[in-house]
Image (cartoon, rainbow, N blue to C red):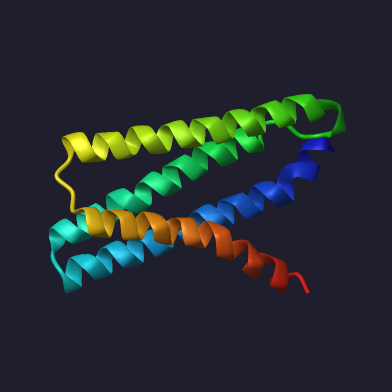
Length: 129
């Protein structure tokens, strides 16, 4: 019963991650075709950073469910947010130091994935009516 209460939230998180991933793939493919392969690769890296960090957060956020686990839910939510920030910083550091990336497509696609993260839930809310 308790796991059933968290199921709708988990499904929304999966849908959001899938939408983010699709948006990143479309933009990366478009940049690879229109500009060049380096831009496409950099766009894929930038969007991938956001998608990976959000996936880790979603895993932590929905680790527990139910009213009796309220303290564990709050703790896992905050842990997920801290991990999301640390993973984002670490992946950007790795991308800057060890991978030859173009900064413009990297940052544009990262910001696009963040925008999807902000605006996609509005689509979910409007579809419920």
